[in-house]
Amino acid sequence: MGIVWAAMGVGIIPLAIMRAMKEIAAKPSEENWIFWSIVLVVLMPIIAFSLITFGVFALKGEYEAID
Amino acid sequence: MANNLSASHSEEVTSTRRVIAASSVGTLIEWYDFYIFGSLAKIISEQFFPKDNPTAALLATLATFAAGFVVRPFGALFFGRLGDLIGRKYTFLVTLVIMGGSTFVIGLVPGYQTIGFWAPAIVFLLRLLQGLALGGEYGGAATYVAEHSPDHQRGYWTSFIQTTATFGLFVSLGVILIVRQSLGLEKFNDWGWRVPFLLSIFLVAISVFIRMKMSESPLFAKLKKEGKTSANPLAESFQKKDNLKMVLLALLGATAGQGVVWYTGQFYALSFLQNACNIEFVQSNIIISIALVIGTPFFVVFGALSDKIGRKWIMMVGMLIAVLTYKPIYQAMYDLGSVKKKVEIKEKTTVEHKAEVKGSDSLKTTITKKTFEDGTTYKEVKKEKFPTDPALKAALPKDKLKPDTKKETTLPQDIFYKMIGLVLIQVIYVTMVYGPIAAFLVELFPTRIRYTSMSLPYHIGNGVFGGLVPLISTRLVEATRPAADLPPADPLAGLMYPILIAAVCFVIGSLYISNKPVATDID
Image (cartoon, rainbow over all chains, first blue to last red; front, top):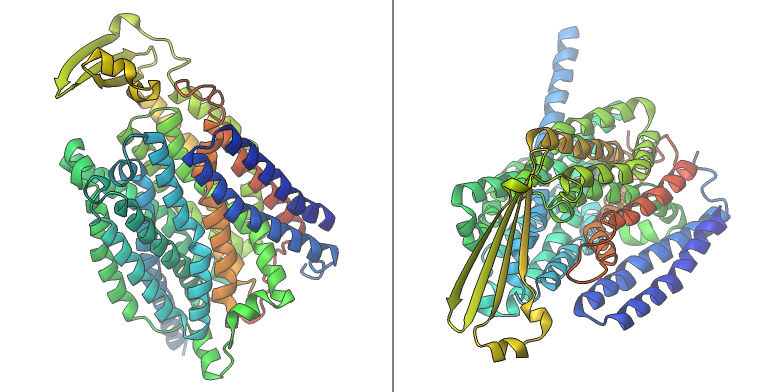
């Protein structure tokens, strides 16, 4: 399953950037900028970093010993 | 001998109760301080942001509200480190003072009309301070109580700390309602909204007084005496693989899902009642408040249950049923609250027109009142302001002529109770995921770096993933609006975000989390 989490983490980066560019290009309003800045600067890096790192740990079997 | 043992046990229980009471009161006040901002979001947007675009002002307020959540992990790092270096007691005393001070000052900041852009800038900064303080508070209080609790009752005792967030929200709603009802709407909107902020200073003073009398956590004091405290808790928490992997597991397998369930069940439910169903302000707040009061004891029920059957599956089941039932619950709320599908009693409908001239502007007000067969009443106040001079009016762009419309639905008693029931179900989910989580987090990390290690995943999960629910969900609903003057096509679109996060968290938590404590030095 580790590969799934890591792939999700990687996949979310282009998805979020493309969506943000599309929406800001369609409506470059202040509210759009605020919203996408929060998503791209705060939420997306946290999700991407944590899923990728978690996925790598899971792939290496780091969580097998916990139970 | 038996008498001595019994006396010593009773002293221990009394002492633990004192610890819990002192910790909980302070944490409750911090949550209260944090949530009055969210509960007063609409008024704050009118007071501190430009009035010419109310949607942008509300979004800017929500962004400021969200900023308070986003900085919480930084507060967790900063104060967590302090807590692991100098001690739990002094650290959460400092956070309490910062929180109370910033809340009090928000109540004193002049509005946008008086100091212009300084107003939102100052409020934004104070909001950041609130977030930092809260980031340091919760981990300290949970760790402090857990380190005083007996091993077999840790879930039970820490669950009292878990009630404080919900109770803090309840108190914030209660104080706002009482102030609003006693002053009247006009005075409340003018200056009365400041009272709940100003009140905070007294609450904090009481709490500081109580906390000053508390002693340091016994586990931390022992560690300090033995010289075994961490020299660099940040490096030990996040640079060592064995601990980092647990931080990530706590975040992705528990706190992120807990955060979205918490904010959907309490905050988004209120926002949904007010914005999607247009339920009248007082009635919607009463619905949430009653559901919170009835639901709060379940934090303790699930906390105690987690001592018997383990923490994991209570949290996972809470997340799973939230994922599966949010859509039908919110659909039912929408069907009960929205007037779209209700049958109108046409002969009871009244329409009142008022026109007045203010300087060079004309103000036209239309008040429409409707009654529906199920007893629901609906009031719509539409205000149109335009220049009296037809040439000037014709020159204005269309969006400047857009009427300001306020819609208010008041539910009859039977639907009001059903609505409480639907919110209560969501509060129960909150208690399932949130009740055992403090004990779960505390048991995941060793004493020397516990404050730092548990605070970060908690505040990223609860603060960032959860705190962004109102902003992201409002935005997802807005995206389904076909045109600016039309209602959103899918009022339930906002649920996609919490459902997705909780679903991923459920899968990760179910697969990887252990049902037994991981840390060995908590006993």
